[in-house]
Image (cartoon, rainbow, N blue to C red; front, side, top):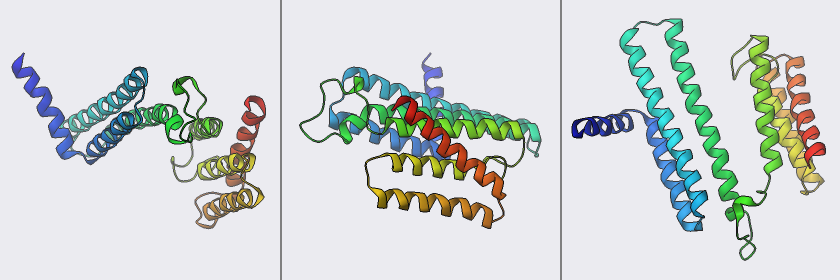
Length: 229
């Protein structure tokens, strides 16, 4: 039992020593825990934060183990070996996104609420900007599904629709629907147009792929705001 425990600790230390992403996750975890202590979150909120942190670190350890095993079994390049590593890395990404959402939902009520106005149970309150975040996540998931269905391009380059354009126009639409004034809304729209134009200019996307991304990002965000706002 004692030997097994030592092996487990050695495995964690080896991962932290050799994998920079593991070190990044540990640093972020320390920051989140310190924020929870500083803001004096409730016991339930602290449990959720710890669970999210543990999930990310667990996924990173499994990803590291998969990479080491694949390198042992297939030292030469093989398409299936690459897929194993990509899927394992995808698990880490999903866990990280989920943890980020949990952290935002818990800490937003403390960070963005003026002093003296914090509710007794912020976990039950609606966090600031929750609809914008939900819209953006929905757009990203739709982009992933559409690119997988189209079967062209890579996650960050090419394919239908343009993920960068969808992301940019979703953000610009959320900004335009927020009470920020027309100047800020126009600036956000201009940035979204510039991002879309850059994808066409660099030859990464065609014009209709960028337009499809813009329509997807703006359309889904508008629909969610009108349905849920």
